[in-house]
Image 1 (cartoon, rainbow, N blue to C red):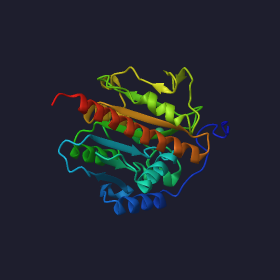
Image 2 (cartoon, helix red, strand yellow):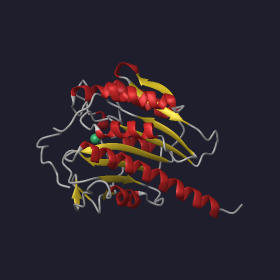
Image 3 (cartoon, rainbow, N blue to C red):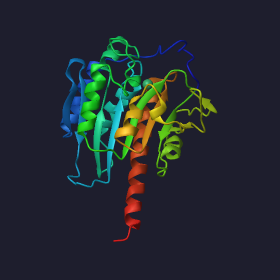
Amino acid sequence: MKRFGNNIKGYSGETMDIAAVLSECTAAARARGWTIEEIHLPTRILGFSRRPTHNPQPAGRIYLSTGIHGDEPAGPLAMRELLQVDQWPSGLDMWLCPCLNPAGFALNHRENAEGVDLNLDYLIPKAAQTVSHIAWLMRQPGFDLCLCLHEDWESHGFYLYEQNPDEQPSLAEAIIARVAEVCPVDRSEIIEGRPARNGIIRPDLDPRTRPQWPEAFFLIMHKTRLSYTLEAPSDFPLSTRVSALVTAVNTALATFLNRRTRQASLEPR
Ligand SMILES: [Zn+2]
């Protein structure tokens, strides 16, 4: 599979009707018993949660988010597919934000309507959307795993960032191996100015030293000890990028749960 070569100074591929996609996400979530909350009413940012285990100690608490950049349609489309297919591994409690920047999608640009890149706004939040999103996140319990779905219009294939400060067993290699079956992987040695290996970037940085925080930094500092930012390559067909993200999420959840179950069976009773 070759790159289109269409994206020259930014994303110029397919767009989508975000209002329609969100309505379909909401309809699927409602039909499957998710709790639906309005995180930021004026821009229609929604939070879904489902805790099917009714267990104070579920096998895992998982958070997924996407759509923080309004020129990355594959993320919300992947969320719609995941919600409609509804094949989540059992035993996991889930929290999900299907689109953190609907206003950006309406304008087909990265930032919100006021021109703020919301994914740089998580240290000292200025945008009302970020303030509301952080307040919502802080009302939820801690997460065992967070996945943030993105796209990169410059990349040669799928790649991911891993933040894993406690050196838990990594999910990265499993994700890359499965995604490689549906989408090219960017195997460059440098991606976005950072050293990479086989599509995996493990940033060696302390968020506390950084002046601007993406959502993933906020999550790792306040809500989780294991996070992946998944980057689909926007210079490939939209359907390929959606499958890459759906495959990455499904693989991450299945691998995570497998390891948890194995761990539990090894523990002394
Ligand atoms: Zn992005």
